[in-house]
Length: 182
Image (cartoon, rainbow, N blue to C red; front, side, top):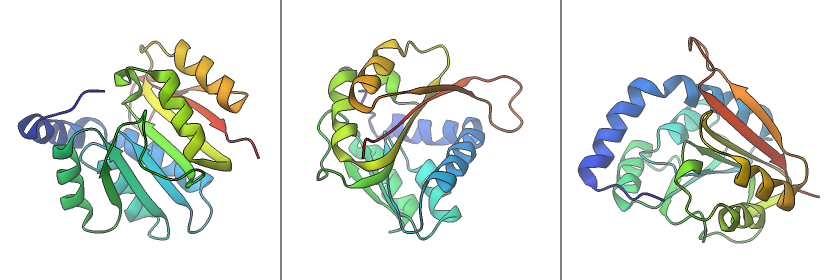
């Protein structure tokens, strides 16, 4: 997974505001449908915390956490979130959370950066509560075969869907999702 320095983190933050707001709104709506009142949600590869901010605005009842490899991204996220979520430096292949901690685990546009997808999916499985939802969003053109195989081995059936946020002319994004075994 790529770790951004401070300037790269700030540049990403500016671009994400312009380019990814529609996707973040779409993911937030998906989380709203999946998460029960007071659910605990983890955003993998949270970056500067834009998605967590959308979720916190939409659902103040959720207990939100974000993890990113870059300490600079986590600093930006902490500033943006002002205590509404808990951003933490960490690696998707070694998540710093106890077993079965989250009812919903999402990731937006970081799957293609994971160097060991199988290890990462093993960690998603470990931290997802039984019956919880894992949903990975990335670009449609990213190779996801390894992720689908790892998700199927850990969770069972995997849904693959094209995601087209409102006002996007084409479906640029893909969602892989699975439910934790009860």
